Image (cartoon, rainbow over all chains, first blue to last red):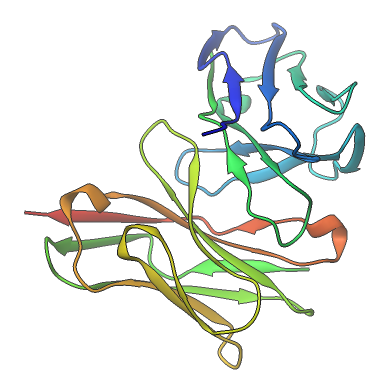
Length: 114
Length: 114
């Protein structure tokens, strides 16, 4: 069964350092999502791509976060510089299309900023 | 804007007992509703979804949910739970506006005790 791949699974970094996460969605899925999940809360959408275009990044802290999906396939989320408050689980998900299609989630990257 | 409220943050229950996890939503347009399950240090997995049609929706692992438009609710139920159902459960809503953005509740921790 096809799965969403994410790497790394765990990342520990010091504040002010740069960090990057990678996501490879299920083949053929046009929509890709990056979520941040703080412990004890539900996932919060950071950015949504439709193919290679950003359709929603209203909750992305653009002064330090960036995301790209250059060829409309895999995606990278970057944080520079990392802050203590960025410690969270970063989840990637993909769906065939947006709206009423279910999202398939990767295993996530657990980020700890020290 | 849409929102999701999961009315119980924690639900303890004994094995083989029935359980209901409550979810209320608000939206100004027709919605699509989802329940996801998350096991520790993993991504989310879809349990079931309501897109249209019958208001009683059956999902995996013996779970079902009922869409109630007048009460704007989508409660999740299982007639007899197992130890393996211990996990975090998230209700989510999306629609065809705003690029089909999904909004998640803060989750309900289901703990099944022997």
